[in-house]
Image 1: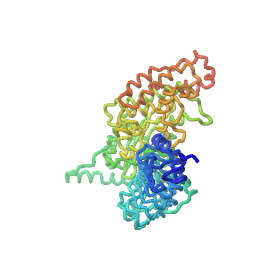
Image 2: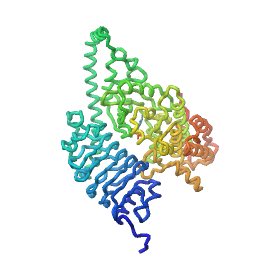
Image 3: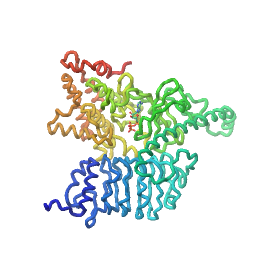
Image 4: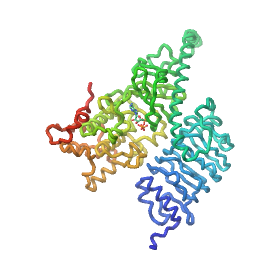
Length: 593
Ligand SMILES: Nc1ncnc2c1ncn2[C@@H]1O[C@H](COP(=O)(O)OP(=O)(O)OP(=O)(O)O)[C@@H](O)[C@H]1O
């Protein structure tokens, strides 16, 4: 055997286990540094004798998946830390890692249950699982070794098991979960109908449980709405009975009368806490109407679950249950919402209403019937071809919306921070509208750092700062998604076909395989190639590593609007004729107003 192939510092199985991890991580930094046959050269890996005892890969911007059985061959691990990356997948099975003392998987995208295998780790001193998307209940952790625990900012549910160890931690270890209850938190556990009791789930249980948790989310929403609706009715009654007396009383005592938050509610100020606040003043429906509406879960975003609710009048609205917010008081939340509500532009998804209570913060948006740009670009069986005209229209519409957000003097909300193709929606006129603007101002900083697109920009990774120019960079990546038809890692980090499009396109240009850049569906339109190259050039400049070299959004709008859609009748592009009516002609770049 060749000398170079003798592994030093770790076993062959351990080296292979690390290589398998690397494959799932798709991380250029690790790709460069993991591979040699001597453990000493592997970044973040600590070997002792011939065994791997430590694995520390913090803050590497890893966007990838880890398999449940990834640690089976790393049996001598004492320290494992993947802190502050974007790693996803179920939590690993630790049943073979009996020496583990410190485990830190905080600030990632792990989902599913907290692995019951942790219960058996009798040497475990520190367990950090905060800021993930974990669901289900906390397992029966009772090892006396465990001195540090944090499971806050997940979607955990159910009573905290009554073990001496779990009860010994401060309630902040459990903060910001979907529905964790019982000591040491101050939330009581009734009513328990939707609460999971701690169990030792097996693998086949995992998927079913995630589905159940989603359904539970919907049920909780409906329950909350029911409670608020009933409470609201009672309140109305009480307010009517007590209003005059209370106001008189308050005046006599010199107390401040509760301030009004919205103009249309001046008559009954207490309602602010219990009812929807409509952006345009006039209430169009009530919480009760949302409650009785049929609802469909559209997905779980980074900042909450999103539902489509169909009202009695057959109108659809989007309800977003926000989570991971900054600790905003009622007034602070309302003030932020008022600022978001002033953002009105034909290429921004209109906010219709919002709701605040201690336990629930909701945003109600107009429903965009043609879904999001990410899905528009992807193939389904009945997919309508996505040609140059509509794609250019999207690039123009999004640029206008972003320019508006950046230029608006009333706005304290810039930058958008999370521009990506699932946040660009297509309305009934096939116009592109940007959603999720304004969230940077209300989402907890730690969460936004972790999940928002702007925080993945080159400048944030280097200087920990972002600006409007980070939005320009996100815009560049979105346009590259439009031009290449590829999945951007910013849009769907968990897709294994996703690539860092800014780098990918730069490489294609540097290595001169430019012909492969454009989506084949676009290449049939030869007359469009000039415009496509112009747009590509703009996107490349938007993606410049140096923020100052990127154009600002006004320049982007000017340039993208100077690109025109060729008159297809004048070209010999016969293959377009069959679907023109469904695509180019129906997609408008300019709002039809
Ligand atoms: N107004 C809307 N009309 C139609 N679909 C919408 C609307 N708002 C959101 N959606 C869709 O609902 C789904 C969930 O959206 P959500 O914003 O919660 O998550 P996301 O866009 O995937 O991620 P993020 O939370 O990072 O924005 C997405 O497919 C999104 O395109």
